[in-house]
Amino acid sequence: MQIETILAHAGLCTDQTTGAISTPIYQTATFRHPALGVSTGYDYSRTINPTRQALENVIAELERGDRGFAFASGMAAITAVLMQFASGDHLIVSDDLYGGTYRIFEKNFRQFGLSVTYEDTSNLEAVQNALIPGKTKAIFIETPTNPLIKITDLGEAIALARSNGVLTIVDNTFMTPYLQRPLELGADVVVHSGTKYLGGHNDVLSGAVVTRLPELSERIGFIQNSTGGVLGPQDSWLVLRGLKTLALRVEKQQENAQKIAEWLAQNDKVNKVYYPGLPEHPGHRVQQKQSTGFGATLSFRVRDSSWAERIINRVKVITFAESLGGVETLITYPVRQTHGDIPVEIREKTGVTDDLLRLSVGIEHVSDLIGDLEQAMET
Ligand SMILES: *Cc1c(COP(=O)(O)O)cnc(C)c1O
Image (cartoon, rainbow, N blue to C red; front, top):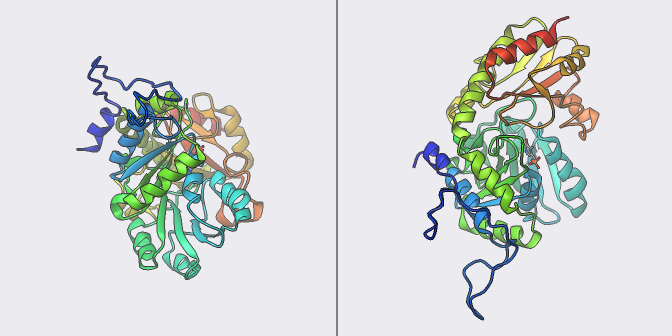
């Protein structure tokens, strides 16, 4: 089935008793057993809950994976994926990535003996050189990266990982399965912050993991149940509700993003625009090859870094807030917000500096958004 159809039918219920169209919110912690040794298939909601299961099934179908797992947040999903590794294991991770992911490697997993090398995963030679035979267990890729929107050629990175017997894990939050499906290209695991585009309304935290092969599904399923960072029934329902309009939202959002990126690129107060939909973006061709769109998150540098604060304080239609992917346009200051936990030296090396602003473009009328940016940028 085509992705648009799967999305529109997300959680479409086949309840025989009532005929309900929408999957009910099974707000229950436990389930009654008909008799000793007999189960309905549902024992306890940490292990399985029908509302969460409806979401997990649709996410697996969207990513064309074996199984899907819903978590309380994107970070809980990433934690579950990292729990499969052991002390002494090494990972290669995209160097420009979500600050929380950097933090979990450095402050949580390093103390358990997991080591990490940050590399520009769009540079395969660098990735190749960072491989430690016998120790490297996975390559963790964000593409596009956050906030500098660098594009990794997934096919090439996956081929390199495979030829070295290591897993490929892709954070697909920015693209969503509507635009990009890494498992189809051979990646082993996809992770999501469902808080962003999947939920799409800035009203629910959630995370997801999708696995390509049953062996990994088994491991992640075990970890999900044993560590318990599961998504609750109410929140599972909200994500199902959000998914129904994902295709429409993303189409509109990226149409707006393209126009804003083009407008910013022409603006003499702007030094640089990072959006893969611009033909001059170094990842434009690769993005066209591996995705069906360019997404709706973009970053730009203002010519004078003191303007950044003024823009943030002046916007009226656009909201100054962390996060991305929702129907409302948000502006973020990565150096102080999403990437504040990354040490200054690393931020400067990767280019997350005080002249950089990130926009998550929503579904408003684009002229209101451009008008707002224009008045906020007036000098
Ligand atoms: C937001 C985000 C996360 C973390 O997800 P939460 O739902 O906030 O826990 C991970 N990766 C990326 C790319 C994100 O944007």
